[in-house]
Image (cartoon, rainbow, N blue to C red; front, side, top):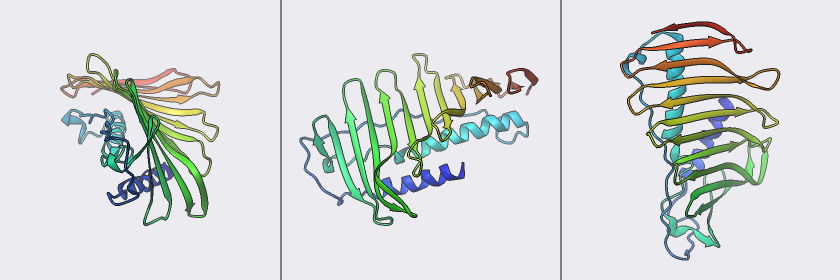
Length: 244
């Protein structure tokens, strides 16, 4: 997890350092780039100081999701799109990060149904040579406001973790955080469901020895802060449950 956090902070540094004077390119017309449809998830006030381990688990998952929301500038394309070059149906911008010397390339596409972007890095980072290495890939479906953001490991050059989000026609917002092993197999995930009335749930899952996904924890709450919890073993058998 520490490695992933460091990776996120490094990547945020790259994208924030993009200035209006870097690599000016006259585009074929002006382009207004959309932003992904992330939402801040609110918990009832009673969760703030609760010592119930399952309320604390739900709070931790939601804080992670909101941190992902707060760091959305890491993967939101720069608004100064007049510095991007249009090549066929893609918008491309390349610049050099002043602090690391790495070359950053951002490729954006935007059509009638979806938009997305990919970030590539080239150069040397702490002894690791990167050659047009994909480190981030994101897309969103416009009609459903659902999408994903994928992060790729510097060294292994494989999918490391990702976020998936969606909002349905009833305003129910769902976020999934997925972690992968070195072979890009899904290892674990947590799911957050946030309802418009202030209720919601958190489910955590792990892969069993047989390779199937197993529910380990389930926490649900109402808008008034009351709720239930349940804990399961690696075979999906209920161990304990309760309410708060």
